[in-house]
Amino acid sequence: MLLMEEQKDLTFQPKVRHSSKHSSSDKRVEERLLEDAYKRKMRMSSRQKQESKRISKSRMPKHSLKSNGYAHKIFEKDFKFALDELQVDMDDSMYFSEFCNLMIELQMIDIKLIHTEKSDDERELLREIWRLLGAESSEETILIRSIRNFI
Image (cartoon, rainbow, N blue to C red; front, side, top):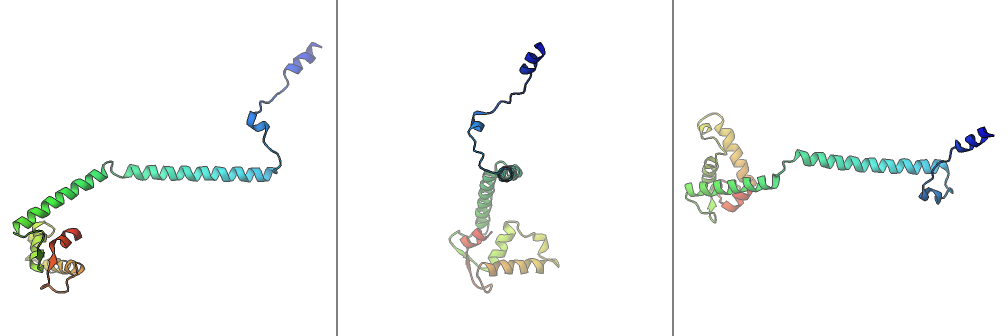
């Protein structure tokens, strides 16, 4: 008799959550498994998206906006200094020869290359930039603001 009482105490009684007590069992097991798998997949894809965003943010410099602003300020300062050296005003326009001098002044073209075999390549690149700015010949002028914005 004592053995029977001990067995009653040892019986398994699962704890059921309150929300589980009210769940409906009108769906088949296969449907529930499919729903569960779909939800897990959605959670995993959202985690992967968050992880990729986190990784891409970690690759980007922390102060990139500040860095870009700083680089822009330095460029503006250098550009104004180059215009002062060439004695040209920002509201003026430039001929091709002045444009070449500006690029040399900005150190975008190495002055050592002027009288070498590579000078033809540099000159051709400058002509291509000149055409991209909208001039068809070296006798035309381009607004300095357009040149600054292009660079």
